Length: 145
Length: 145
DNA sequence: CCCCAAGAGTTGATACGTCAACTCTAGCCT
DNA sequence: AGGCTAGAGTTGACGTATCAACTCTTGGGG
Image (cartoon, rainbow over all chains, first blue to last red; front, side, top):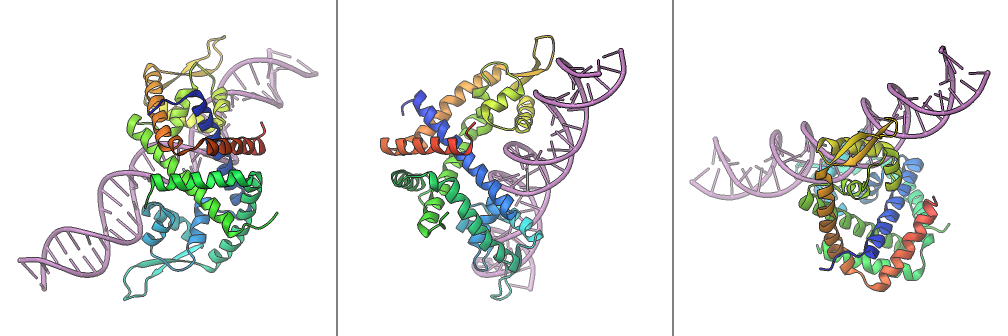
């Protein structure tokens, strides 16, 4: 395991900086255009049908407790509703409200446009291929599940 | 401004997922090996000499208030100290404590090793070049300053 | 039938980032 | 000199992420 060279650090710093800028830019866009955070956006687009909390957490790759906290906040704003699961009246489920479904649609369009403008338009085909293959490798390596 | 195609979304989702995994992995490593967060690490390596808060904030590209909050927490743990600037007894400055300097060194080694193992070892030369040029383009585009 | 162990979900404590409002001081203007 | 303004720094409120501890229900053993 070799040491990090100055070039390695420069590469790393630049990448981290670009990442931070992109995330901040997109967060602000989503907040400005739709009034939601990126995390809330993820919930809106993932929750296409009624689900249990654990199922949603798995789909998002988040911890249950994070999902629970976020759902509490979103419920207060009328974007999601906690319901009963139906099957025997067992446990709680969650689903989008009408307002949540409406927001999911408009936010997808707005966020997509922001992504395209901020990130994808700056990307050549070669760069896209390199980044895709690297991303896939990283995901496999860190979280093979 | 074209719409996002399903391939665009797939590319985006994979990249975001890889990013999240990498950041989480490195954060945990730093916490486990050195007991500090990534933000604290950045302060430790940036604060090589006594500085003013605004100078540090500029060097890091962060908001002053974020720096101030973080310094408050780090001061409590004895990693940094708020001092007077000297020149005429004007304003407050900040500097690393002995403990902070020690941690800066060991954390740089530990964190560097984690970065190399987690990220750089998964990278070919071509991918590195593509990602570097893309990162630079993004930084120019979003934050030309 | 009663108890208890496991799984699902929630809650609380703590840490962090952001925004806006606030304090303090130095330099300037008259 | 008196007062105003600009810049530096801090603080508080709020939303958010993580971890651990907690509650509730269900299903199994005795």
